[in-house]
Image 1 (cartoon, one colour):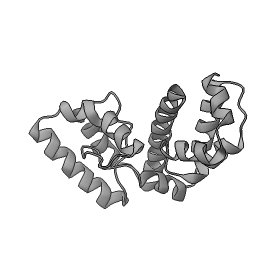
Image 2 (tube, one colour; image 1 turned 90 degrees about the vertical axis):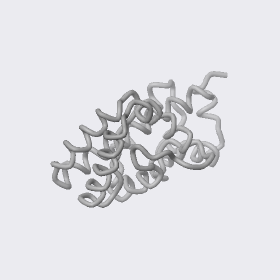
Image 3 (cartoon, rainbow, N blue to C red; image 1 turned 45 degrees about the vertical axis):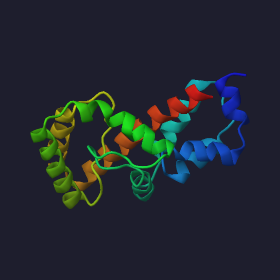
Image 4 (tube, rainbow, N blue to C red; image 1 turned 30 degrees about the vertical axis):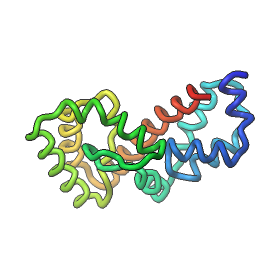
Length: 168
């Protein structure tokens, strides 16, 4: 049985749980579950992307709730925590003490300015690159930053969905 067939056949509750590990916004997963069956993998990915783009700001904030600060190690045995540790692992090993300290300060300034954690799709990025992005985004107004955050959350959810599909 192909991954798409398995995805389409999973019980709705089980699939919603799988999708929550990709993006902790129940409306996102519910929308994807409701759109089944899908003809192929690209249709699943496209539906997930569209569902992520349709999230309200409150739903984006729900999704953010499952993400640790950049540079902090996600705790616990959950799939989300494991993925977060993996996504940040390259960055964690690529920074010196000065960069780590600057990232902590950028996180603090960002949270003070915007009221939520700094979110970036960290896969494949060094801490220096992440720090530069955090500093650059501190200059955004609230509306512009919300759009960036929603897009970064969408990218992360897409990468995680690919992992779920690969595991089926």
